[in-house]
Image (cartoon, rainbow, N blue to C red):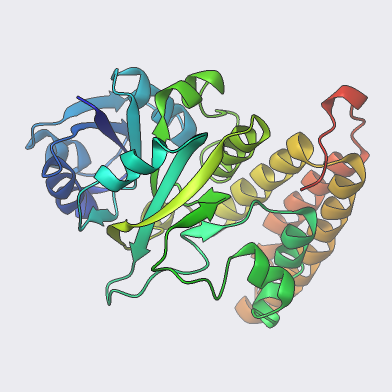
Length: 310
């Protein structure tokens, strides 16, 4: 089997059926790794001829991906979200990964109306400035600002194949040898967010290229799993992993600047949330994020742990 499709599920009962039916139609081996779903996900997957790995606890997305990849010997590995339904075959992604030094390739994600999910399916690797704009609400207030347009590749021609930096993990093919050389996904990004960005960054640092191939298309709903996670926890997970990524890949100065932006932006979000909800609930979550940013700001890093800012 040349390609295997790895699907990580978490309370995905409503989405997993169409996803697996389309994945199986490609002829690829299909592996489902379930992170302790409490709904009927296992039953839905069990009705189909797929390999099923059922975790008793939620091990997080990165760990589940690594589990799925270890369960197969296929040289090409397609990560597919359970809310993504393939509308085409996956051969062009394999062909893209055969290009010189291409280690990973992403396809086109479209919404229910068939519109490309521009801004999500393809991005540049984040800089401290791009993430600071996100933390400070500048991208929400001025989505078309130059920093955000560059980061999210807004305005690109989504119908043309091209080199990329960060294809979305919802539809992402990897070469096994690249995954092995990188020693898999970094499982410290728990339970999700930034593990695919980190993988793309580490691959690029080793000289591998990423590619965007629009001939492979999937209909993607998005955010189905996080609907089962409390909003407060989502914020903590996202910012915690953002700060982890910054510590790992940015220079000390860039990391400290981003920490300050996260702290200031969290205060803005807390005040806005209190006014909108007429409640003190936002105080708890955003004060926790400020503490995370403060701890990262004052943490002393060894010189050898530094990374140049991208």
